[in-house]
Image 1 (cartoon, rainbow, N blue to C red):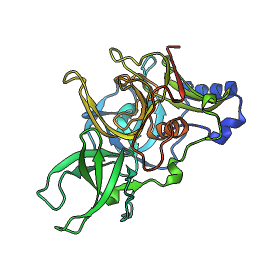
Image 2 (cartoon, rainbow, N blue to C red):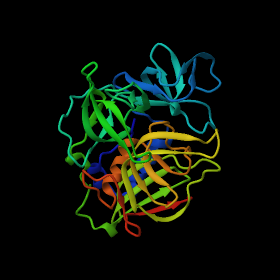
Image 3 (cartoon, rainbow, N blue to C red):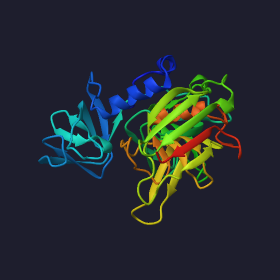
Image 4 (tube, rainbow, N blue to C red):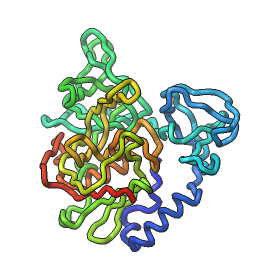
Length: 341
């Protein structure tokens, strides 16, 4: 649930100092916009404790398992003084949970698009989660579970002769294989949605600053602050490197996996809006496996809400055409300065 309190046009009306001051005052004062309706949330932790009061010392009422879909009717600034994150959710008819392990989601279904361009087309998951398949019109084989707002490269439409269901065929660049996604749960992007943002601004006059101490990303056109987003950078032992970088390598979707041992291993299909800044794989990208933005949480990348990562992806260079899966231009890209303070 992104809380960029001003839209981009409103950003441009304010000076950099006043805009940043407004954002930080809302971020640190405990103010949270009141929810106007009940929203859905997906549990991200293996077992998430629901408490009687919104603090880690509150009485345990029950536990909910990963991928359980819950109803959120309130967001609070609570917890105890000194807690590293004091954002909590109230679950309707249940109790309070720490917000970092709940992904706000929606459940939207989509019509099938029968004609897929020969170059392929990008789509995103529009339900809390869905199970993909490795086999259609053949022996059934379950594929990876795919999550809300993850992105996938679609190359074809397939009808299952066994039951008449429709599926999109998705390409996995990391494994060079394919998997299938039900057409009802994936929305295909239009060219307008992927068009560059502020293409009239010269490339050298755009730059990004990331402050590790405040876990903030600031985007500038010339000296005007045009976008702010909370991020989650590298946690201890996985620190995000500091210095000057460029977004020289970009993908709208990628299957990220790795890790040195059972405690650090990860396998994340469809990571959205990837703007890499190092040869070792450090990237600004969307994140669907935690909601802990504003606090170090990653393996070294700059984790962002998917909508924030999409904005950065569209605003930075190099630009990708709708049918392109990859841009790799060493020495060319939007400037990114990662600063400790």
